[in-house]
Image (cartoon, rainbow, N blue to C red; front, side, top):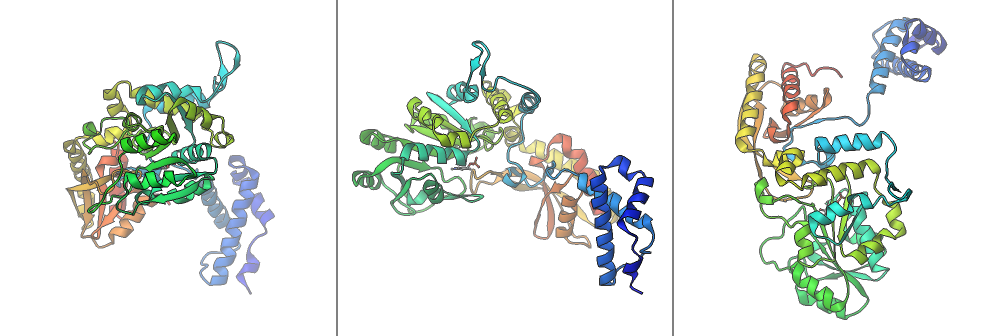
Length: 470
Ligand SMILES: *Cc1c(COP(=O)(O)O)cnc(C)c1O
């Protein structure tokens, strides 16, 4: 007889589930779905010849349903530990937020607020008023606007300013930032024409000038290459000379800066990187940058610059489609406020403090982790050691820059480093590391002190061959 005939009916299993208290602990609909899944799995296993249990015993289905329900209730979006050494890891949510930003976001999300309400006058206010003054204070802009992200900010700027005419961009700046963001496509999406000038490696002011003279040009766009570098026989026009040309021709110069560094690069141990303030000082009419790259805040796109241009963007219908959420505004405002005291910004904004952590301190963390798991590693034949290594700033910033760091490397065991890396990802909390030269590599610069105990626990368990739950 086919063993599948022995599988109990769903109704009978539901009764058993009720008796076992499952329906008291979980919504009835989910219990039913869990039982269906258990029955389907059993049926498939019998058909595949891999079933070993008694198909008539309800206990097996209830156990499977319990596991299914536990898995089903785990949130899809969950924290992970970043041991990749990439500080602004786009796949891992970019910038972790400062405590004051998290607190502000929770407070504003929890209730009503003056998001679009002028408390003094009792009339409608503007959500765009909340961060504008702070952005102006920190960048020297006349006015500013915050939208959903930097890609959105650029589309908004181009669509509001170009009005269907062309935008001039150097061929050396037609970059892809990642996640489908390509400058030529963004320009077209904004309803503007793309007027490419120069060559990949060299674009001169004369190239821009000739394009503008040919007519039909609404503005100049300069794009920070962000994630790649051009070296060798190169030439490009600086922002200041482009600004002069734009001024002569009466058209705006938009600078897509991306990274949004508001701190002093040297104090982070990083090479110089243009800041929004410098961009505006050099003559950009509008600069657009991200909230969650080197600024270290929540996902947002910030436009700063000339008052009348920002006003045009603010009244564009596209602005409504790209509008920023109240919790984001709260988190961004709290993050921006930290920059009034550069010392505070460096210590309280996690992305900045990770970058500024002295190498010696990262080394101590690496050595502490090795000491904590050395015994577990040695017992099963893995070799574990702390060595110097390099991480990256990430988020499409500082291409080719090696961030000095200290790593913990594990190798030489019976299993593969890839398998270790996978087990670390699958546990709770998931730990994301990397594999290099057949060794598991954990970079301690991006592991926060509060996470060290979890890292040691997870690593010991995985090395001992017990990845933990799941
Ligand atoms: C990262 C980046 C963007 C996109 O920013 P998002 O905030 O991810 O939308 C746009 N332009 C440049 C130059 C960038 O580096």
